[in-house]
Image (tube, rainbow, N blue to C red; front, side):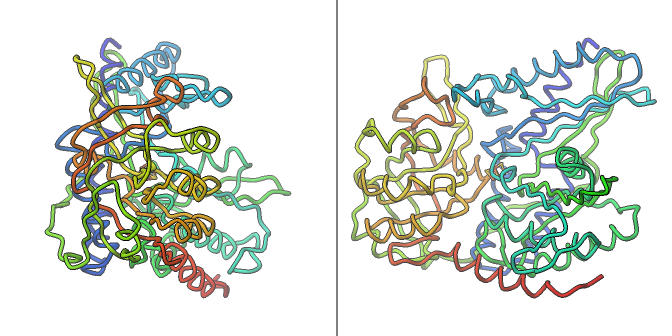
Length: 506
Ligand code: SF4
């Protein structure tokens, strides 16, 4: 097993930087079907550009490289203790190389371990099997989409869908609701793994296991094969669209599994994965530890850069610091290119700024909800390796006050924010910009220099406040200073669509 650790490192790097062909084909199909010139089409163009850039640069597709979760099948007699040690060593090395973000945080102190190792991280599940080879599969599922996983306990009353019973029709309603509730916060269009049955714990575990199925496989259980087809046909009618911008494509894959349950329980568990569906696997020689073959590399994909056709008339250029007048001239749907300085800030920074001063002036500034992947070179200079937006909704309790307290003009993230922030934007003369979730390589290219960092020691790399010089950083106005929110509109529209699925089908 001399080469096992090295093989694991290859697996981690490939999973983080190279989207598998079946996922690429799904994205390609979405591009073909989406309306030319729409906001969703612009988001898809950016996603494709990002996927190709990540492959070329061997950089993380998305800055949130998620909770590394390994499913390992070993022949009888394999030493799982040694294997676990080597998997952890490979995770730490991939983190050092900037292929994984430092994602392991002490839940009580908030301290980041800095190497992705710690109690509960990474997740490794061993299984023995009667096969001579080792099979290792890895999924990197980020927090934005992990937070949109959902579990239903039937029977129940589902908003918009009414009575939801313990039968196939009830399961159908749960899955439609799961797609609706994710909106853009899980970086739609998504892939869902569904588990019927089990208990609360095994249900979620089994749902995540469905994500390891090939996208073009066929469910051997007739009823579930039909349900998968039904969902793939109808979930897109909800109109959530890429990044929740509205559009024709809301779902890229649906895989459903079933397991037994207790008589008293009936869970439907849904694992929601964003478009950046990073899962890969390898078969390994148990004597040498070398890779024998890759599991998700079959077939080809024709994902190509295409010239984006729309929006040229609506593009507005903003240079920080930004005036109130410039902000009041912006409306939902405008595409904005930002230049000058922006500051990152996410959960820890928002909580901190409520009771403290900012380390730099934020007057007229841009606050970017982002936890980047950063690397220091030999001369001690920081470089941005991946810098897509994080889910903004988590900052809803703080955002309006922070905008007002520090005179911010722009907050930017993904998935939109709620009514309190919308009112705050109007009162203070600020806008919310939606950057394309997961487009971490694409946005890293817009960063010209790192001006500095604050709170690195206290909060760790993803949560620190990075001061970045950007040039032509693109995003879309989805909440303006006049009380308009694209997110609220898409939510309303898709909820009305969801209600159309209340009548029984089975
Ligand atoms: S694409 Fe979006 S949901 Fe997925 S890991 Fe990245 S930020 Fe999170």
